[in-house]
Length: 125
Image 1 (tube, rainbow, N blue to C red):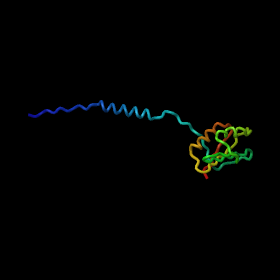
Image 2 (image 1 turned 180 degrees about the vertical axis):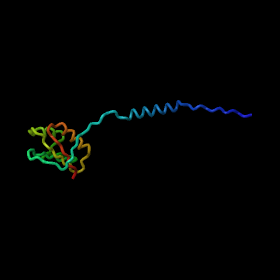
Image 3 (image 1 turned 90 degrees about the vertical axis):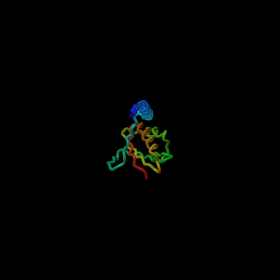
Image 4 (image 1 turned 120 degrees about the horizontal axis):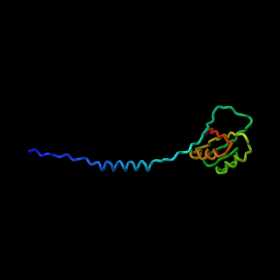
């Protein structure tokens, strides 16, 4: 006589548990925020106007200087707003040393809040 072997049914309970845990994991580790954008203009060939004299900002890892005078990042907006220019003023930003991307982003966020300033990043030297 031949014994009849019954096939065991596959339990789907553990598969559903694993899928639920993966779904929960990916939902909790995802970010649903919208990141801010910072407008960046790079230096290049262009036409310069003699009417407006550009401001010059040197950015180092530990200090800032506006037209040769040291200034703190928190006071930069006030220093630029104190300049009584009605027309948009170009601002040349020169990076010195190993300036981090976070420091440059913090600077550009501050500059975005100053009306009439058009910042151009020259690059690292």
